[in-house]
Image (cartoon, rainbow, N blue to C red; front, side, top):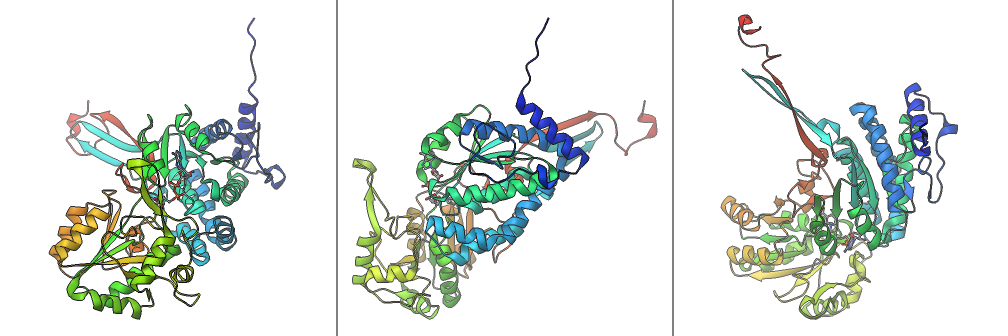
Length: 492
Ligand code: NAD
């Protein structure tokens, strides 16, 4: 006689499926927001106390999502977009209060724009080859459960944007958020899951580890249930992901240089540089971080920056700020400059004060002339101060820009009307985003063309991530049939 064991998780899954099929998940059946789920999968709204539970819940949700088809994915995504837009103000305030970096108006704006500009299921266009031997169709299939690591610089926007892309591709996701942005991450994930559950009867399409640590990140990388890793962050986590035995999509660090040559429209360049570098107090990985200007227009460019609203620091003020803002980290040969935590992502007025200058609270950017050796040049400072370096020629400016980018191949910007100069810089730096005559954010479709994502895969080469990034190609071949062209006699 055989004995059957009953898995309570599959019962929960069957019940949810039945509710989904009759299409009436009542408000009473909807899971209630709670602190952290431990031991139970349904009703957790995505927030779990361990990696293992989060992966199990996401696996269960993946199986249910498969049954809902592309239309189900589309509806799930529409809730994430709607909440990102409708709750942008409240969630943006929460993120700003918790992380204490960046600018409130931009925290709110980032949630709103992602709701509108991150692509969805329409990106999954199949390819068809038809010929004398029949048909081949290439479709885009999901990986399954994806493990995601997200940064503190855009905690909830990165999660929401990853979730839209990954669910559009048919996947579910487990997030290990940055510890300093975990509360807003959990709140956003709860809201997304609740709304999706109420509409579709599926919980936990996006799951999250409530108390993330480096250990939980490693556990996520190694978990057998995780089929793909997507990491958005700085050098340490990018290295860890690249060393993982699983396939990883790595959105790594940047240090975007700007070149301004003698043919540039200097006022336009100045306005663009302030717009990009001041955005969220220069927390964006694509934000302008150091500027190399051809000597013949250097003084005119500094004047244009002042006209555009930047505050120019004197040499001694730049020295004072450098001592306060950049500190050394690491040991021995790994010792390198890093931004000081107290000033990272803080307002330009505070930086001005640290430099010994006075400024209006509404100031967006401070800047000043430095030499090449100033640590602000090689460091991804993530604060609204920009070093401007005087270069003899545009070729020298391009060369310096190349060195300062450290081969991250992330983002570079040029202000020039000389197409050949643009081409030379584009070829040498070989960056994922290369913006000409606009602010860095134009490279993400904000004031430029194209779509948006907050995860720009750099060392692994996928670029600005889309739903396609999170899919596998599958080819389905039908031999000798279904082709309309050809003689009727050819059909047996
Ligand atoms: P961070 O590297 O400190 O943290 C990012 C995430 O990685 C966090 O969740 C953190 O807990 C985790 N982490 C750090 N070290 C780890 C390790 N050894 N193993 C596993 N997990 C680890 O970065 P941050 O300060 O949160 O974000 C800023 C950095 O992220 C900048 O370098 C910026 O350029 C980069 N970034 C890149 C993109 C992109 O799309 N390429 C987008 C946003 C931010």
